[in-house]
Image (cartoon, rainbow, N blue to C red; front, top):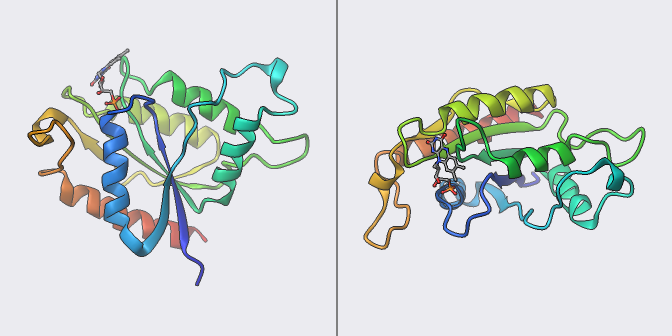
Length: 186
Ligand code: FNR
C-alpha cells in the first residue's frame, strides 16, 4: 500500500514559531505511518491578478506539493483573532486553478487544524475563521478533534523550546484521527 502523504502548512514565517514547533511535534506523533513534510512557502509573492498566469515558480511548486498530498494539516497562529495574512495569501493562490479548465488543487483535500498561542484563546477564533475559508474552498475539514493550545509558554523547556506536556496526548489523538480521516476519505 502506498504511504500516505501529509503536508503541513504553518501560518507563521517566524524562525522560532511555536506553531512550526508544534508541526514538528505532529511529525513525531505521526512517525513512520505517513510521509510528513512542512510546506516551504516563504518565497510565495503577494497575490496579484496581474501575475496570475503563468503562475510564479514558487506558486507552481506549492501547488504541486498540495496536489501530491493526501492530507493537509494546518498549524495556525492567531493574529487579531484571525489567522495570519501570509496564510490567507497562500490560500488565495491555492484557491485558483493552475490554468483555465483545471481543477483547483485544494478541492476535496482532507484537512486538520491545530494551533498554539501564548494567550488564552489558544487560536480557537483563528481556527473558526480558517474553517470558514477552507470549507468554502471545498476542502474536507476534520472538525473533531481540533487542537487548541492556550498559554503555550507553560509548555516550554529550559531552552524556551516547545516541549508538549499537557497537550501531548491530544496531539497524538489528533494525529491518529487524521490518519483515519484520510483513509476514510479515499
Ligand atoms: C498576536 N498574538 C495574538 N495572540 C492571541 O492569542 N490572539 C490574538 O488575537 C493575537 N493577535 C496578535 C496579532 C499580531 C499582529 C501578532 C504579531 C501577535 C500573539 C501571537 O499568538 C504570538 O505572537 C504567537 O507566538 C504567534 O505564533 P508563532 O509565530 O509563534 O507560531
